[in-house]
Amino acid sequence: MKKKWWHEKTAYQIYPKSFLDTNHDGIGDLRGIISKLDYLKELGIGIVWLSPVYCSPLADQGYDISDYYNVDPRFGTMEDLEELLAEAKKRDIHVVMDLVVNHCSDEHEWFKKACEDPDGKYGRYFFIEDIKDGKYPCNWRSYFGGGVWEPLPGHPDKCYLHLFHKKQPDLNWENPEVREDIYKMICWWLEKGLAGFRIDAIINIKKVLPWRDYPSDRADGLCSIQNMLEDAVGIDDFLGEMRDRCFRVYDAFTVGEVFNEKEEDFPNFISDDGYFSTMFDFRAACLGASEKGWYDLKPVTPDLYRDACFFSQRRAKDIGFYSNIIENHDEPRGVSRYIPEKDLNDTSKKMLATLQFMFKGLPFLYQGQEIGMENTVFETPDQIDDINTLDEYKTALEAGLSAEEALKAVARMSRDNARTPFQWSAAEHAGFTDGTPWLRVNPNYRRINLESQISDPNSVFQYYRKLTALRTDPLYRDCIVYGDFLPLWEDQHNLVAFLRKSEHQTLMVIANFQSEAREISLDQPYKKLVLTNLLDAADTPASEDERKDLTLQGYQAVILEL
Ligand code: GLC
Ligand code: CA
Image (tube, rainbow, N blue to C red; front, side):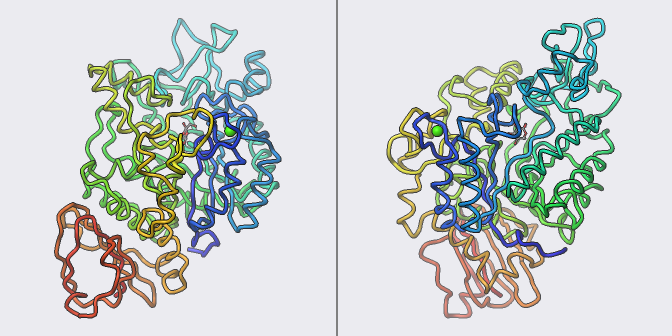
């Protein structure tokens, strides 16, 4: 694996709408982000990914783009964005934006022109078909519920394809003109000084053609899109072309949102010559998922969590660098998902953080993670904003759950959990806005907020700072960034332990993923306690015995130098 500038960094995802509002409209904006660049620097961030700020009707919060070349006025202006890039550069922070090119918005001019003339040039930018005898071309279920076909506005006999929401028509990658327009746009942004992109929903660009039905898997008579993803072949041509025509030319940093790639294709995605620099590891995020819907989610145990992370660590070995996450804007808060509610506290939050930073790969934080933000509470269904959650709520009701059960079930997984405004302080609306926030602030903001954590050396925030600092510390950097991953004691219950081993150093990571204490005996006394999440155990004990026979408290994590 070739060494790259970004391997040593810590990355951070900003969800602009919920980060910081500076003009009182209750919507986070670019000026808010600019004003917090010093904060990000202090946290130790070297790469920032901005979720979409392009012009958009915000049907899917910006993942429905109506103009790829402009900033939505709700987020600011192009000048603001240019200032953000320039100010970030001064602080050695590399900015990447979202590349959403599986689909655009139905309000994009391409789609409007396609509706005007479905047989013309822009009609071929989308997948437009005839509705024959009242029947759509195939029975796939959209990711956000209902079928993937929708009547084409103004043409009741025709329909268009949308794998996501009906306001997100899929772009036809089979058409070389579409690809040219996309590459032109990508290069335009890279010329502007963008470091690269996070690449949205990319596995979906290749469709199985001609359209075909698969056996239905729910009462709605439709089938999961997974079926067609398994059958689709040929995405490599598209991704290889995009890499060669755009990313390679600018040596861009790219991180793919890739689900369901074929096992044998994995190296093509992130090896040295891969389509992308890196891709997210979603294996833990997918745990417990059910074909029936979120209401049928299976519990995630510490052992399942460990096995998922270890699987990915082994898989990426010698091939490339994963981007490791605990959560993102599509997931509930990781601390609420992976730690039992009764055990959710600063220690267990720091334990998860320790693992994320000590696995091999690029640690990718999501805004608010660094202060231990938790899932929010939903008292009534009208507190749900997210289209995905609304659909899953409907699915749960259709499956026979009561309204109360359905709300509880989808609240566990709701994307809104991660989208509530950043909790800057204990002031009204958590200091996010002095207007009315677009989404309700998590009621726990007086207890969990950045202001109170900055001055507290034992806070979750200060612990994250230690982790980012450790990653660049000349004493440990080489081992943490490039050291081999070697699993330990995988037969033990509620224990996550492994070595990171470089030529000159061995670090041992042990996380006691349970509330009960446990004893661990090492073969040899360790040399040094590099870091632990327990406040009163931070010094390396003098006695050899204590460095050999360890007692780990509940949710204690240690990084030891052997
Ligand atoms: C990705 C985004 C998600 C969005 C979807 C459709 O999964 O992360 O937020 O809804 O793609 O663009
Ligand atoms: Ca604003």
